[in-house]
Image (cartoon, rainbow over all chains, first blue to last red):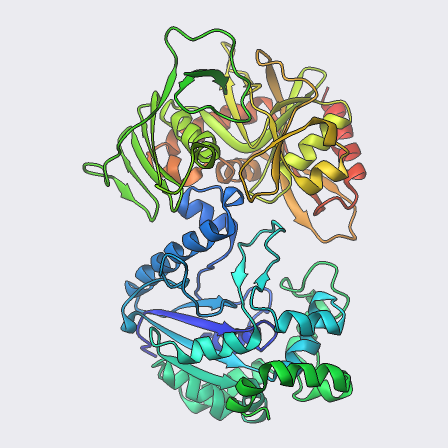
Length: 287
Length: 303
C-alpha cells in the first residue's frame, strides 16, 4: 500500500459526514481485523485549530489574538503542516470545516503551496439534512440552524467564545461548497454523502483511488463494514464519543439517513434553504 | 521609561506595560530593559527555526504575525519592532507573555503555565493549557479568601534549603468578561487587555509584590463533562513529573533551548516538597462553588 505523502484536507461543512469519512479511511488503513475505536481514530493527522498544539508550535498566546490575527496564524500553521506532510511518505490527514477562502493579506487560509503538495476530499450533503443534524448536534432550534447555514459571517466556535479550538471560517453553505469546488489551488475529489450511503464500496473506493492508495476491493469492503452506522452507534452507546459536544442530548451517530429532513422541516424552513442555496443545490443534485 | 517589577525582576521599558503595577522609583540597574529597535529577519546559526520563532544560544527571535516582532537577549533585554499597522498596546500583552517567558527561561528559571494563589501563607498553583480555566478558578479562589500571587505564569524558585517558593509577580489578573460578570468583579475591572478582545485587567483583592511563599501544591486542571462533580486525585511522583514538564510555560522553547535536563532536576526538587493533584471539573461556571470548596479542603488538609 504505497500511498505517497502530502497533506490531505478532509473538508466539509459541519454535519456532512466528515467523521464518517475519517473512520472509513482509518479502517481502510488499519491492519487490525476489527473496527477502529471511534474514540481513538488511528489516522495520522494534524489539527489546524487546536489551541494547545498551535501554541506549542508557535509560542503565541492565541487567546490574545484578534480574529484576523488568529486566521493569519492559522494560515501559517497550514503551511507548516503542508511542509511536514511533504517530507512524509504517508499522507497526513487534516480535517477542516473551513470554507476555501483568502485572507485580507491575500494568503489562502489553508496556506500557500504548490498544487502537488496537497489534495482534498470534499464531502457534501443535502443542506436540508445538514440543518436537521446541526440542530440536534448543537442543541439549536431548527430555525437557528437554518439561519446559520445562510450566514456568510459564520464561524465555529462563535468568535466571542474562547474554547480549546481557534475559530474556523465556514461562510454560508453555498459559499462553502462552491468555494471548495471552484478553487484551483488544491486538486479536489467530491463525495456526495447520499452516494456514499447508497454505494459505499464504489464511492469510497473512488476516493481512495483519488488519493493514490493501492487498496484491494476486499479491504474497501471491510472498511465499509467496520464503519457501518450500526457499528458506530454500538461503540458510542458503550463508550460515548469524545467529539460529541458537552451537554448534547442526542447521540453523535444518529440515523445518518438521506432525506430525513422531509419529516422534520416545515415547508417554510425548507423553502428558505432552497431560496438561499438553490443554485448550489442544483449543481450538486439536490434539486 | 516605565519601571516595574515582574516575576521578581526589575524592568525598565520604553513601552508602558498595561496590567503591571508601576514602580515609584526608577531602577538604577534594571534586570531587564525593553526598547524599540530594528530586529534582524533571522538569527545567526539558529539551533531551531519554527514557523514564528528561532533560537540561537541565548538569543530568541519571535513574531506575532500582523502584530510585532521581538528579540530576547540573554535574559536581560527585549527589543520590540511593531508591525506598521500595530500599536504598542497591541504588542505589550505578547511581550509580557512570551517575551518575559523567554527572559525567564534564559535565566534558567522553572516557570509553570499557571496562576498562583495562597492560603495561610502557602502557595497553590493552578496549572493547565490555555482555556483550562486557570485564571477563572484563581479569581474565584480569591473571592473565597485566597491571596492573589500571579496570573497565567508562575515562577518557582528555590530557597537556601532548596524549598520551592513562588513570588507574587506584580501584575493584574486577566479575566474574560463573562468571568468578571459571573464572579461579580465589575467594581475591580480595569482596561481591556487588547482592543477587540473581551478580556480585561482586574485588580486583585491585594497584590503584595514582596510576597515569597512556599509552594504547597500544584493543581493540574483537566476537563470533565458538565454533569459530573469536581474531583481531585493526588498524583504519584512518577505520574506528576511528566505532567509538570508538559505544563512548563512555553515548554517547546525550553526544549529547544536545551533546558530539558535542568528542568527535570528543578521539577524533581519541586516534587520533594509539594503535592500535585489532578483537578477534574466542569468547564465554565458549572459547579464553580463546589470546585472552590474542593480545592480549599485539599489545601487545608495539607496544612
